[in-house]
Each structure stands twice: as structure tokens, then as C-alpha cells.
Amino acid sequence: MAVTVTRRDPRYLALRRGHNLRWPAHDADAAERILICESADDAQAALQQVVTAGLRPTVRSGGHCYEDFVANNPGGAILDVGSLSLVTRDASSGTFHVGSGAQLWNTYEALYKHYGVTLPGGVCGTVGVGGHVSGGGYGPLSRLHGLICDWMTAVHILTVDRNGKVIPIRADANEHPDLFRACRGAGGGSFGLITEFEFNTLPPAPSEVAKASLSFSWEGMTLQKFTDILVTFGKYWETRGQERDTWGMYSVLELAHRSSGKFSLSVQFCNPDGTCRDLQVLQEYLNLFVRWHEKNNTAKAAIGRNDWFDACAMSAGDAANRRGKYKSAYMRRGFTPAEATVIYKYLTKEIEGTSLHAASFDAHSYGGAVNRREMAEKTAITQRGSVIKLQPLTYWEDPEEGEAQTQWLAEFYEELYSGPDADPQHAGTPYWNHQYQGCYINYPDVDMLKYNYWPQLYYGEENYEHLQTVKRRYDPNNVFHHAMSVRL
Image: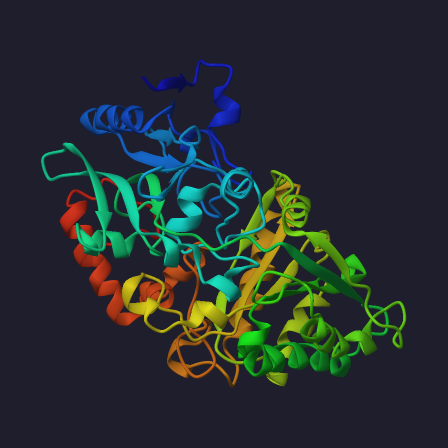
């Protein structure tokens, strides 16, 4: 039986919120109760209880939702499935089973120690598998192996029928294939409560990885130098970075605000066979940027080699609970000088009374195995032609700074996508064209709701209609909903 935590319980204040301290925005916005589910049966009984009582359920696995879709639930109930965290393998079929409440680091650890395999997912160890996988799931090994949802072969999900009865479903390519496809990238909170994922096979974990980083000082950083760095980064991933021998390389250009003093380029690499016997591809890549390195523009970048498991553990550290705002975009091509000019403008902008030292514009290498076109028909992730994925973001501590921080990011984003590279009919957004492929649903941004075409930004035009059909079939009463859920 699920444990129920109400407002009178001393645990309530801690359990009513997730990692983003912006939510709940006000006490009146908080859920009235949190139900801690220990098993799939618990989750089914708890969901039935909540639905029968006429309450709105929201579901939490890791608690990393960027917007208020879970924590802001006035009068409702949060179903916490964090304890559904078992990672096992069926002895007869060889199928891997991963509970939706498992956190990424614990999942990597269990899969590696017991079976020598892994999921090609993200680096934040406390992210819950439930939201991460259902929204696509990508990370340092995705260019080599594809997205996590590409490997998923079945999903266990609790749906609610027209009569309010909770119906447990196991969906795969043969049974409930439309629901199965929707759960492979359309995000959580639209169709039901996911309790478990199945994977018939998983990729072998690399034996080792090579890592390196370069930093670039803002002191003396001109617009021209900044533009050269961005164009070099983008051009590589648009061209050379799509060749198969580079698929084991993952790089992030973390463009921190000038007030932080510097920004950086990090890279993780392994050969396609999971070894680091040949580092020529990595060295070739680093050589493109070393001339701008703040320490010594003539020296080679230092490359460290680690067992993959150790490297994974070092990057999986706990995520700090703080206030944050995030946006996203997929890029089909590298940066243009016009884009670099806008990015430079906002990363050097100052706001009186507000510090942007924790603001950043992060560009992640993309493509490789992710861009297998056939997966656009098998999953809900249709962005299969991009070479860079962007995450503009900002963090702050003082609640009073929230308006200034979010306004800075909103203006930055809107101006960036109102330039010559954007579609004039969809100005202010990275709408699908020769340069962009919309946004990532696992980085939800309610600012996009002001555009009546926001669903197409995240899902594409034809795919969203399919998702609406799935929604009408499996959640006809719209039990599972939030500001950016699939509409009936």
C-alpha cells in the first residue's frame, strides 16, 4: 500500500517539490498529498484511489521537471514512483527490465556491474528513468548508439479508461503499438503512469573513454574571436562529425555568461569498438580549438583516459536544488555569424541588480546514430536530421531575481530566432526549416505556449496528429494533463 503524506506530515514540505525550487510557486499551488508507491501494484491502487476521488494525479520519478507540471497541482495528488527502481534481467529471455523510478546513475551501475551493458542516456545521475526515457533520453553515448527510446522494446503503463477505471497495459510493437510509439519520445504526463521499461538488448558499455576540456577567457574575447569558435564548432559537427569514426565523440560548448570569467569546451571520446586505442579523431578535433585556449595557445590539450565506469561515476554527481529556467532547440547546421552575434550580445549583457554568472548557452554535439531516419517512424522523436542540440539556461538563488532572469532568457531566445536564419512566419522560434528542427520536449518551456503552433515545434506537424489520436484512445477523460501535454 502506498504511503500517503499530507500537509500535516513533517515530510510534506520536502516531498511536495522537486529539484527546481521555483515550484510550487505558492503554497496554494502545492498538491494536497503525495503518495509514495513501493511497487507497480501500489501505483495502480494509488492511481485508482486518486481518480475515484476526482483528484488530478501528477507523476514524479526523479523530480527534474523543468516546469511546474508535477509540483503545481492545487488540490491534487503527486504519485511518487521513485521506489520503482529495480533493474533486472529475465534469465530465460534475456530482456532487461528497468523501473520508471530508477535514477540514471543507479541504472548505469546495475547494468554495468551485472551485465556489462548500459543505456545511452544523460550525465545527471539523479534524473529519473521514467521522464528521461519517455521524452527520448540522450547523452554522451547517443551519437554512438542512438537515443534510449530507440532501444526500448516495451513499456508498462497505467491508463484510465472512459469509465474511470485504471487499466494496466504492456505496450510493444505488436500490442498497442500506437501507445508504444508515443511513449518513445513524446514525454511524460500525457497518456498514463509508466511503471517499467523493457529492453530486449542494450549496447555494451565502453571499456574506457578519453576526456579533455579547453577553457576560453572572456577577457579579450572579441566578437570576431567568439564567432570563429562557434562557427568552427558547428562546422565540425555539420560535416566531419557525421562520419562514422567520430560517432564515439560527444562534445559540449558551454558558453557561460561573461560574468563567470570564461567559457569552455569539453569532450568525451571512445572508438566505435569502445576502446581508446586510437585517439587521432579526438586530437584532430581538439587541434581546431587549442589556438583560443586561455592557458597556452601553442600547447596541445591535455587528454585523460579513464575506465568508462569511473568516468561515468565522476560526472553523475548530485544535482543541486535551485531555481532555473531552460529552453531548447535542434540545429540541422552549424552556427552562422548572425547567430553568433546575438549569442555574444546576450552573454556579455549586464542587468542591474541581477547576476547572470550562472547563465549559460550550452551546445551539445548531436547526430550520428541518432539520425537513423527509420527511427522517426518508430518513435515520437522525429528530429532525426540535427547535428547540434541547444540548451540555453539560467540559474539563480534569490526568488526576487526570477523575473529579470527569465526575461533576459526570453529576450535572448526570441531575438536569436528572429534573424535571417529563422522562418519569418514563425519568428522567435526555431521552427523547422533548413537550419532548425524545433524543440526538445524533455526541456519543456511554457513560453512557447504563446505560439499556436507550439506542438509542431516539439513534435512536428504529422506526428502531433498521431499523438492526439493516441491521447483520445488511452486517456479520453484527459486525466493526465499539464500545460504542455498532448491535447485531446
